[in-house]
Image (cartoon, rainbow, N blue to C red; front, side, top):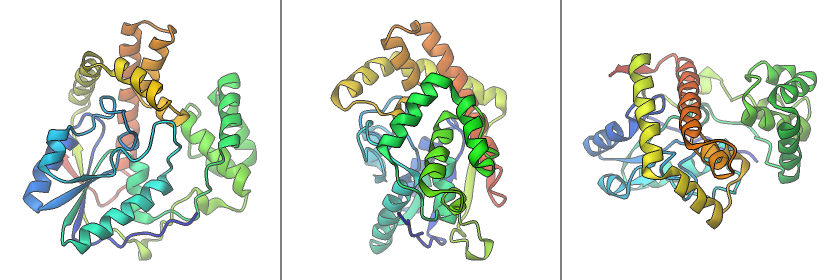
Length: 296
């Protein structure tokens, strides 16, 4: 599938930052001031029923400014960066037709990179292959799958942490589906001369100790607000697929529901994984050389 790239200009701004940095609240204030629609760039908020763990804007917050790209698919449905880019393209064109500015708010770096630089001929998801790779992951562990990837596609393996199960599986899908000559299925169309995103990127930043404190508070609030019950309800109503089940808070809630860990362990593990996520996000954001960092 080939995802064409929207030509973004001065009518679009990105507001991003690590998880728990305060993107939603600031985004709503900016959207009101700019007369803009908010386009969500969050890989968990695309799933219906996963509201607490994704810190999805509340209905009241959504009423303050129009929001898009929330609740797109059931949690059991695979949803790729290419899928998101195609959906984003439609929303952007609609906003422009209505004379609205676009404020992209979210912390999924791959979505932002795709929106900025495009994504060439991304290999489609093969449900059977993904099932087999997931089974292999559960049996052997991520490091063994990373070694397997390194044997066939060392260029992809070099870009992925050995414990990043989600990206390892996706890279193996690309390697096995597209073959060794399909490098641009994974790499982005990063041609500076053809860059289609001249508008500013704003990154909310906090000192690490403050961000970690905000993360801990958010995770505790998630469990107090009923993320375990939300996970049970989503599993019953929709089913929760491999991708959604890896999201911080939902993975731990599922483990708690299955009796694999107790609730305090679920909370502790969620805090740890969320801090790790924030660290990876900040690393990604530094790759946007022209980003404007907002010290909070």
